[in-house]
Length: 270
Image 1: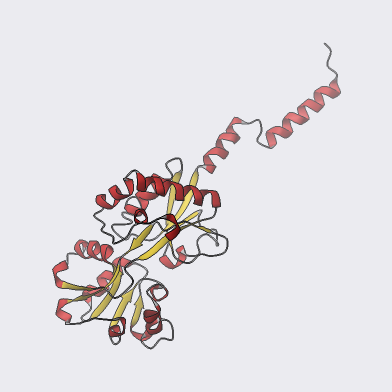
Image 2: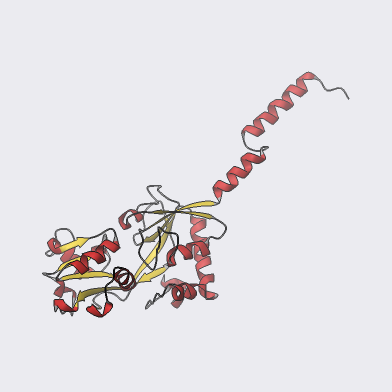
C-alpha cells in the first residue's frame, strides 16, 4: 500500500506531540511516577523519644514510615512554630505535630497525645498546687505553649500577660531542658517523656526533680496534609496500626508511657 507524504507528515506531528505530553516516553512516565511517590514531611527538631538522630528514627518518624510504606519520605526539620504554617506556606506535603487547623490544609485525627507537666528541682523547694502558683518563677516552655495549656496559663503568660516577663519559649527542647538544669529556681513545662530522655542524655538524675500535674492530662496533636485523600489514607492506616498492635509496639520500643493514645477512643472523639 502506498502511503502519501502528507499522511506521513501528519503522523510524525502527532507522535511528536504525544511525546511532548509524556504519553509515549517511558522515561518521562517513570520520572513522573517517582516524583509522585515522594513526600516532603515537616517535623520538629529532635525531641527524644519522638524524633531522634536528625529525624532518621524515633516514634513519630517510625509511625510515618509505617503509615506510608509506598512513599519515599523526605523529612525536613522545622521549629515547632513553623510546623503550624508549613502546609499553607507550601513548605511541605505533610506537617507532623500541629494543633491549629488552618485554611489550605487537611488535618488528621489525633495521632499522639503529649503528657505535659510542670517540673522543678527538689533543691529549689518549690510547691505547685495550681497554675497561679507559677507566678514569680521563671517558666521555660516550647513555642506557643501559652496557646495550648488552658485559659489560666494563657492569662498569665501570653504576650501582655501579668507574668509574661518571666516566661521563656525555647524552639529547641534540648536547649530548654539544659536551661532548666542550669537555673536555680526555674519551672520547666514540657512533655515528661521528652524531659526524661533529654535529662538522662545530659547526665542528670530524675531523682533530683519533682513533677506536678497542673495541666489537662494530655495535649493532642494532629498531622496536617496538603492533600485530602492522603489525609484520609493516614486516618485509615492509623486505625489499622491500632488494631494490629503496631502502635503499642512503637510505644514499647521507645519506652513511651502516655495516659491516652489514639487507640483508646472511638473516632468521633478525635
